[in-house]
Image 1 (cartoon, one colour):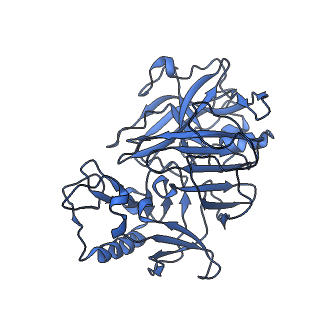
Image 2 (tube, one colour):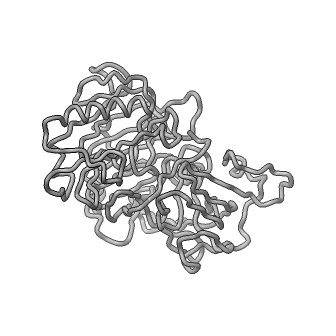
Image 3 (cartoon, one colour):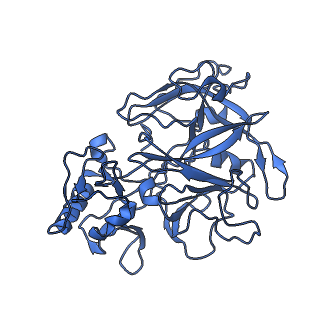
Length: 414
């Protein structure tokens, strides 16, 4: 499955796809999240705290799942209720680190899929019918209809499609810079045969997140002294988060490197915790990236055989409405992530990221994300069209970007 991603940038960002659900099909915009398993949509049951009008909400039709269903027990959420009666509906409650939450029931419905040969499939997939949404944090929730959960658990959409034999359990996303969107694919059709840098996913202890093995953090290709750091690859996070030790080490090096340069601290700009200003306002990151160095994560060993994930300045800086530049790497310890480190959307821009659940690995390769890669089809190329067309035996389509998204991170899943 490939879906296109498109939109605009601001201080808070999110990426979403358009998917049809139900019969007759109804189109929903869903925030893509590789950091969680459960897909849910705002649901007219009726709905409390929903951002979508009633006619844009999902309407259940006596299609809830019982709590005895395998995927209900597979939710494994801290807030899950005990199943006292196997015929009771499967309720869920999912919480987020910004104190946002969704409460609802699991349902099953058709997801119409159109394949490359023109045929269609209508697999019944399980997702959440969210009838109570809360977002008490300082940032408003994204105005999407819900979340597309693409984590490693059984209830994720990619896992369900794989178990039905529709696609392989491989997820590919490519996020363009400058608000041009990108694409999301489920299946291995778009995975390049060469040029991808791969690192293994951590298998012990078991995790539903895409968590890597230990890495070393480099600044301008030089050691920072921060080693043994694991990272979670999470498209549901707007920003990249380092734990307190790594964050302070990197921030100190950035500030040291800026000494004697034109940039000055901008404490009056509260867009993000650390910002700088110049005499003239910046219009884009390209105006200011010359002042900053590349940050790198080296996985799996020594300088010769390690796998390097590069975060250039344009992948960790943002320009605010005031024309200042801010650091898009944040202190995760301060928001309750404890010792966890997260690579988020800001650092995924301009690269294809591959979550290979078949081989328990994650990969990346630089890419022009506003164009589909050439995988041998005649209908490749520009993603300017509204319709999303599948490629091969998989699902492929456009991603959209939006703004003002809260940070979504699931309690109990880290």
